[in-house]
Length: 497
Image (tube, rainbow, N blue to C red; front, top):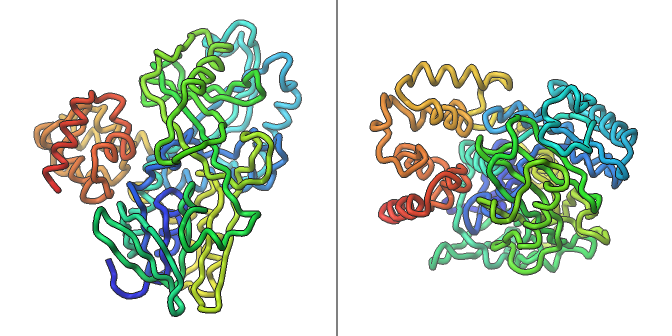
């Protein structure tokens, strides 16, 4: 940790905070990021994991937001082709719901509002010509297929933090900020790391604390009435694979909402999401029994393979810190963001991020830096649309070729391990595979091909400290590991401390 006054301190280690830290450090500013838990430990690791424009936002006339997000899709794909890739979504037409003509018009807008160069356009699909309809009930006979992107959300956060660090930022996880206040032209930030107190000073403060953005002592009173949060819980369930096809479904539910069914981690299907106003701690959000039943029912009305709550192998919930625009229903609340800057006579500046979504994090960070240009005086212009994230230095269409290279270089390692390594780390996988010839060369295996070499890398390079960090955020190996495996991993990590 630096002892001088930082140019910029960012509070919050979610996607917005890490994106801002990367942008600031890359423009030459001395930057520190403070996160009370692990990176992506709240909302940013509990999304539907899509880089998308938000098709349903068109119904709420949020054309500017949809356009902004659509432009970002292929930019994010180009800078992170290892953790982001294209998906095709089939939207079945249901009689008595949105007319087919309206669906097609909406998808035409979705294709043409901006930014689609590599992704294929929308097409009409019919049961008699498309085997995917075999997974649907017989009453669904036609639909529309369109493109969006998948992203490993927690890894996107970690890679932004790693890039920020490579540009000179200090990334301080498990540092809980308790209070901030202005002091002689800068901010004094106080908090706790475990039971040890710390103090940091910075000229500019960015409040990117997500669900806690309006709770930060010393900042919350500066937020105007029109910049309040509405906490909305989005829950997801994971069940054994429902059908054999790489494409996804976007299902129109009886209440007018939509539910995604997405092939997940080879052997599973991911189903989500809900929109429920959240009460209580955002740190301990869980999918309720009612939400789990809701998602099961949404699938059961349209898919042939039925799911029940007892089929759920994992569920998770994220609390979205939405801008409270006064919408009656949670699903109608805007997904756009608001940046609120406050200057004082003493000179210290604070900028708070209210709302936002995963897809627009990078352009949000650019806007933050633009708003702070008068006080920070950037040494470099915008760069994050072109500079790849760590491990992403290969073509967007080059994933399979990179896998083949690794299979050639590591012929005795399991192909499943190498495929996962390239998907998670891209060209950085060699940093922990090293010169390994066999699995034994990678050290102890904790289960599901998680070896000591990978664990050491995650702790040394990617800020991981606990088993949960490793098996649920740096990876999703928790789906394939027993509780005994995870406990043994935690015990081994405890011995390192």
